[in-house]
Image (cartoon, rainbow over all chains, first blue to last red; front, side):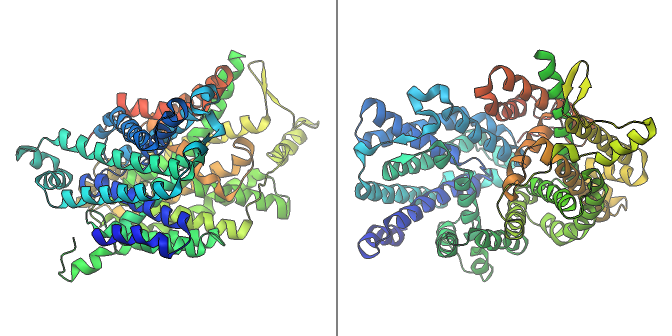
Length: 295
Length: 307
């Protein structure tokens, strides 16, 4: 964890494409957020981007209307993501694919709500947000690295604590876990809120970094799907799995994705199919099968 | 105005239930989520489009062609993907990701093959040969204008796709309740392991259901140029979300539930479109979440979907 954080803290002075590095940091954060909820509880959040967008808009509303300093507004980003998470806790009653679909629908509902032209005085509706007053990419980048470190610390904690163990027990068999004294509902809600706050911070810092964006940008389903696929590709419920996934797949994306998007889409789709069919536990399972314990 | 939006809601609702029908069958039988459903719909739309553009064929004839073609594609596709998937630890979740990958592959290949420009078929072309036939029977030409239903006039393509949807629903109903394979299919739907234990060839039954499922999607696609607007390789995603809303509002396994879901969806969509148009695109999602939370098993469902 420390090496990754250090690497991304130092890289900007070596490599000049800041935006690319920033996107890597954002996806590393989101992939770990997905890891918290999918890897440790088994809920697949297809609308995970909802929290990202809620964070971005929580940040922007405070900056636009109250002229709050960015760091304070970042707190609002976390708060609004947690508020959305609390609002959506009833979804945790659903199982399997129903949860994923309801979550996707929820994120789209929030998107259409925020981009409604009737709300233009508050959210700027579909016309997008401009925060040029607080534009400061260098500071925003540092904070993004800090947010990523926070996400990593959370996952390290889950790997090494009673709470994380309880979550994995609930994922494997909720009834047995409950009879062993785990408060199933409570640990699930905690994991859900933790993963929402991670995405909320990521969204807030994203809004700060780009400073001009549209509702479709911060609520694009690509974020959820990329984050899920990256996390799964490396291997969930580990610390380094999602990191490996983001570095490899997002690396490939940046290598060929911009010039020939359809060929990237083809390779990416085929990779996903092969992954699910032959390595459903992610790349990490290659190493795990040989008896090496992966953190 | 009210009657118009109600009736057009019913017509669109029937079409939406056609879109959801195949997805419902696949999910009901295999418990896997075919996220590529909308992409098969898109391929069906291109099938009709190319038949029309290259040979001037009436899209009505594309229906049987698409049905047979996609049912034949579905069988090997099932054996290539699903048995391996079902052996994994969490097939329902992994299927979402697997079929997302498949949907990406289909979308990418069609973009490479067809380009990204929007294509369409003129509305008057649908049923051209049928009209000629009816006109020959009646002894005079039939105009391809709007069709009157209860004093309101609608584009003939809307009415025709609603009728085709009813036929498709009747077909699935007949298949499930009046044929031996359908009987076995229902057995697999209700208890997969017990069906296996009684000696039913579960994979053969599921493969047939999978083939029918994507064939139904492709039929929905034949009407897509008239109901959903112009066709592009990227249209699949929206179609998938719509079909999900429809089958979740209805309920799993029963074709009648899908029809009900489609009607609820279509009518409420048209009503909101008419009276509160700026909030219309919020509706399907709220409807979906609301139904899932209040009645998780759908309007006609018996199964429980709670964790």
